[in-house]
Image (tube, rainbow, N blue to C red; front, side, top):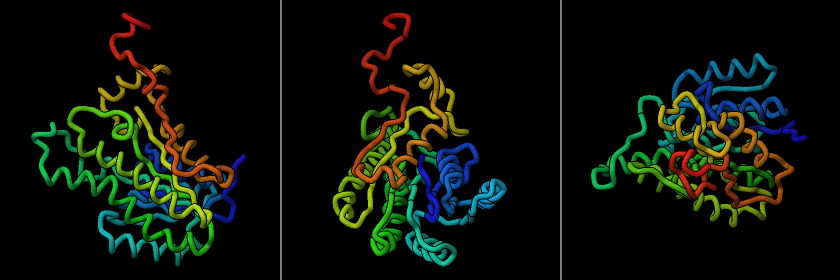
Length: 262
């Protein structure tokens, strides 16, 4: 139903073979897009080769997206290598190779940890979007899809104040931006995943997935399909929206042992 022929998609956070970013890049490529993939390590070259083996025009790039000057250089290089950028998937965040997510209660959250969570989860999409946006405005078309989370905008967990604040901020940023760029043919939306079975999923997170209404965690592909829809031409009248992909978990008022209620 959806095609991306003649379009270039930039997907950040695509280095993990089992992650949401790479699943999104693969589907976009299979639907006709040329794909620029970004990660912090050279494993991104392996991901690009995998896409090329499927007949997809793809190129991998290494960049530290928390550094504004590297983001500027990245975007300029992609524009030299491709004809433009029509789709931006801001997926980088949450975890990064060599920089694991930290958990601490609010009173013991260090200022360094707080700043790191904000930079990783909201400053990265700010930098990338700000550098890509002028080119989308010039071409009069763009689709920006941000990976937020149910954690922050809708629910939270102990020890995740920084992460929750950052992911809620992504949604707020997207709403403001959607108002500013809608007249340029650009939409800005968010996907809010719940418990997803990526390679970084912990045992407790997997247990959370088993207790959703669908009794399982979601797959990266299930999140990716939602992102691809919002990135499509057909989603032209949706902007500033947040699409929850959590197997109905936030619907549940009762969260105790299922045998006592369900």
